[in-house]
Length: 138
Image 1 (tube, rainbow, N blue to C red):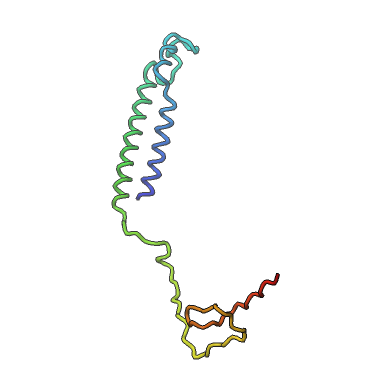
Image 2 (cartoon, rainbow, N blue to C red):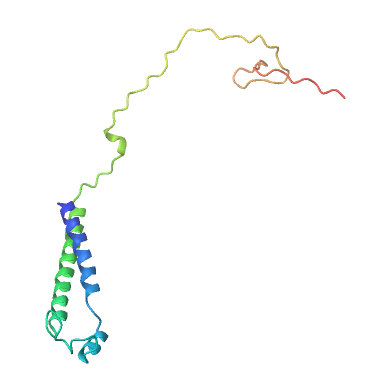
């Protein structure tokens, strides 16, 4: 329903724009009354001397009222929608990740020599995986 109302709303908007652009301003009436533009007054018009302005004005009014009506209808339809917020991934099944099982593997002791002053915070020992830097000679 909302999609249909939105399509009608867009066509009405384009219709109002087109009708407004077709209409001529009030300043153009003075030139037409004196016969400039050929045809001597309003004798060459399709709707008669005053019918064009009245017809286009009525059509513009009808299109504008229908446009405002569809605006109110779209507002009502939008207010009646389900307002629960969700995520894009709510419908996706994500497999559960299991934690690795604890093993009885003994800790590997390092064959590297211990570095003085390099205590690890977890064990308090002076073992490190980083070899000691050579001393600078002068």
